[in-house]
Length: 499
Image 1 (cartoon, one colour):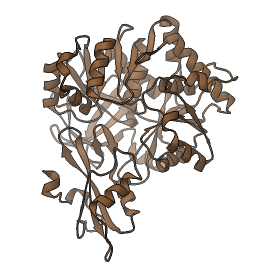
Image 2: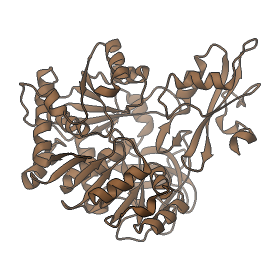
Image 3: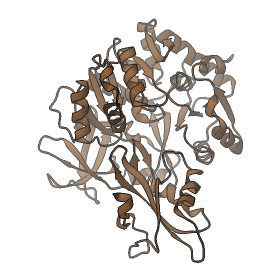
Image 4: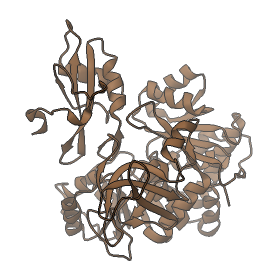
């Protein structure tokens, strides 16, 4: 089995009449899911999509997402999922870089993707939240396209602190293996499970741990397009959710929901946290309030994503990311790639079936990230005597805001487009609920004028809503190193901002 979509066919053959996907009153059985995905595959083929072509998706967590995703895979395409909050110029970059044949977008949020598609010269196809199969259905074949293990299944865009975003090329083998390991050794799901699908499916955490692992288990995935703590609790009660997966801010929102005690969440058997470090106090508070243990893990887009976890039948250590999962090795290395001494801080390096094929069309970047078969994560950690890893810092200067990655250079580039800006440094500052908030220090060009509000609004118009800096302040100049490089780590945050 090479094509990841084979999982859907196998489960439909065994559990065809069981619910696969739910969004409020809309429900698809596994038979319905399979048929809708086949209709999408037929429609894509009728539109000229060939095996190996890239199909972009701009869809939130609606029923059409899994249908389009599996349909595109069935047709042999590689999927390029995008955050629906992206602006037109961001979508345009992803379309150009991936060489996407077309983009499929939710009809109610189609403006940015349609504008970007027109600029690139590809089609933008709109679908409703539940009718992708009917909308995209065509006269082409809906049969499963054979693929090889090393063929690209998904290209997920991520970026470092320098350079443009990079597409992590995840193969059918990467995603299939990581989903199977997640299902068999972490979730231990069955067809009786109901998985809460509030993690964005355009993010690899939701894609692998909720959708792909859920299909393997024959479980039902109940979807929440826009997360809200009280709404999530009501869905857990309504659908008898057994497995909740989220980023720490989701756990915090549910914990702090004013009416949390009126919801019956006794069906929960397992909660899984990832995306960013979970504060230990939030974990303890959630477990006490809802009577369900939380297992925390770790991964990246480049590792499909799961690399380590606090495993369900092993000692759980809050504040750690556990131990490597099946089929994965992790070690801590110094800048020269040598193992650090026991107890010392080092950069996490990962090797295994989950590590990406490379960055799409960027062999030099791939060679930097995987110089010797071990993927360098940019995350610094310690390992205890039991083999558990604990993140201590990020070597990369990425900001994680509410589970979403924000890359300082992208924000700085937007600021630099303002005619009054001479220098800009984007930094993360601690936030009690989001983990980190985006902030920026700006130095103006001599003889120009701009205030913090104007600069904030400037960036807000140019990047997704979760990215723009909530705090902006003006400085005479920014700290620099010997070569003149701006030192983000040395930026002083004003007391009124940090306090």
